[in-house]
Amino acid sequence: MASLKLKNIKKTYDGKKFIIKGVDLEIKDKEFIIFVGPSGCGKSTMLRMIAGLEEITDGELYINDELVNNFSPQERKTAMVFQSYALYPHMTIYDNIAFSLKLKKVNPDIIKKKVEEVSKILDLDEFLKRKPASLSGGQRQRVAIGRAIIREPKVLLFDEPLSNLDAKLRNRMRFEISKLRKNLNSTFVYVTHDQVEAMTLADRIVVFNDGHIQQVGTPMDLYDKPSNLFVAGFIGSPQINSFKGTIEGTTFKHELFSYNLNKTVTHKEIILAIRSEHIEIVTENEDITGEVILIETLGNETILWIENNNFDFKIRLNAPDNKIKNGDKLKFKFQSENIHLFNAETEVRI
Amino acid sequence: MTKKHYRRYIPFKTILTHLTLIFLSVITLYPVLWVFKMAFSPTQGFSTSLKGDYTLNNFITLFTITDSESNLLMIRQFWNSIFVSVISAFIGLVLATSAAYAFSRFEFKGKKSGMSAMLITQMFPGVLVIIPLYLILDNIGLLNSLWGLILVYSTTTVPFSIFMLKGYFDTIPKEIEEAAVMDGASQFTIFIKIILPLSRPALAITGLFSFMTAWNEFILAATFMGQEKYYTVPVMLQSFVGAFNTQWGLFAAGSIIVSLPVVILFLYVQKHLVGGLTAGGIKG
Image (cartoon, rainbow over all chains, first blue to last red; front, side, top):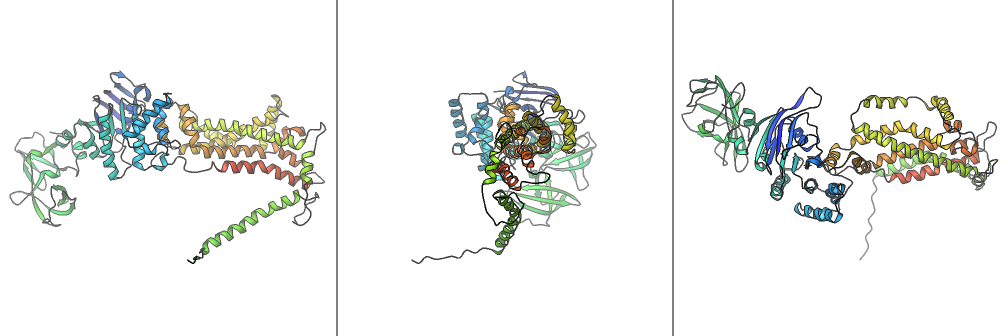
């Protein structure tokens, strides 16, 4: 049970270059928050500062309204699952999970009971006497989770926990984590660069870039109403299509096409963005055209790569379409209700 | 039912490998045979022929030599060597392990220059420090004392040991320690319960190195120890080599006895020299 408050948090290692440039965020009790962003955006550093592994250069971190800047991880009651598992290789699985309780000199009978409880939740019963080296990646990550939850932490932190697993196992573990979440009273903060994980697990997603928070919101908020071009491009696969052009009256003019926005926009230069599933193939009356250069058949959906004069965009069809062939010249229509407009200079949503 | 016999097929490459290894082993081991021959020979002459009589006389003589105070010299000196080497290795290892861990993990002023300084100390040959060490030991009253040797040995091996151990500690993933920090372990607990168990091979080899350095050292021991009863075994061995006459039989028998502890220690340490102790800890 813990709410977190981050107040203007900054981080620098050398006193000059700031990795985190002032982060404000409130995380509610038992919320599942996911930090996403490209490599080097500061999301892991932020997580490590919450954990207590990195010093907070400037700003304040509150857990349950208590200032914890100078608290150890133990005092903060945070626990962390590392990307690389970071198990103790010389100890058995039992000892790995029990380590924190043994350090606290908890009664051995209670430790035994708790380890059994945790190993049952995580399906680790049969491995307790083994050492980490004899376990598979997924099993090791479950041990790492067990080691974290046995302490009943207030805040459970995950640093890209699934990125070392193969796709099938990742799906399975994603399911395990969301199941785990229902059984625990902890607040979850989770770092990933995989937007599928972010979209499926999070109550709210925090998008980081270049040491700043770009947007905070529910997965669908970010998808439907990205507050800037970066978020629009980062969330959603395939990446959102964007076209830079000028405004004349109510019309958006691009090198390839004109598009009537049916509303006045005060900016002169804007970026029009639209997701691949919001472009329709039509037969007439449109001046958006292009040639199919690649067809990605994914079974339940098909992605078409369209090219026209060095500009390319992608459209998504909800079913396989055998009629469309490479080299076909098609006409397209943008669904007007799903168009996103951004200021070309600031890339902020209009 | 008839029993079928399969002829095991040995590839030519395997035969070639074995022949090469056997040849190299003979070249390496044959000279050692001479030592055994001379040790068991009834004469004190220098002979490389393996023919002739064999006797235990040299060993018996060795163990019964006494000094003017009728101390059994061989046993006394052997004990001196064991005592000095074990304690030097232990002290050196304790100092080097903790220092190497600090050099590997902590940021502090003088870390870089400290490492360089230790390298620089390795540039000077031991003979250069004999006179200063002699004066220092004389001043603190540790000449003709085994503790004097222990002090010198345990400090001289430390820089190199730190280098070896730091190199090993650097390979232990930091995440494992961070996980322990999250689990509430203090720096000391991490050192004792995580780092040391994971460093067994490095500790074993560094300990062995320190032990052997002390065990084989001759010049300092010969300079600082004035009386026979304080000699270590290398000094004892040297005393069989005279200016006009060398007792090769006793020398050879002595060499064998002196080698034994090192051989035994090596066999014991060998089982700790396993790789992959950190396997399974992190995704590698």
